Length: 89
Image 1 (cartoon, rainbow, N blue to C red):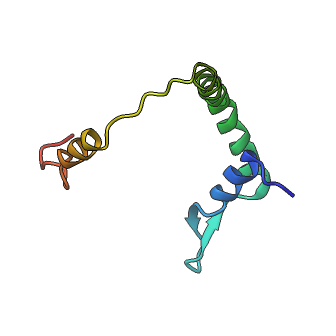
Image 2 (cartoon, one colour; image 1 turned 45 degrees about the horizontal axis):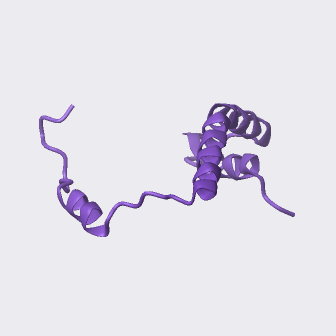
């Protein structure tokens, strides 16, 4: 059995508590609601995924893929601060 993207999203939503009951235990969404939410999420991201897949297929046909040099990526990551400034909004 293969797990679909819908199944993976619904399973991930199972771990998200929506509130706590009177005993302090986490309450999560039921399977039907999780599947509905996962379906809605897929409806939004499916066009983006199809576009990315089409671009990847085009690149494979053309044989040209642009890759950033490792030094560029390393230098860019080094400029990212470890903490946000106090006045960041």
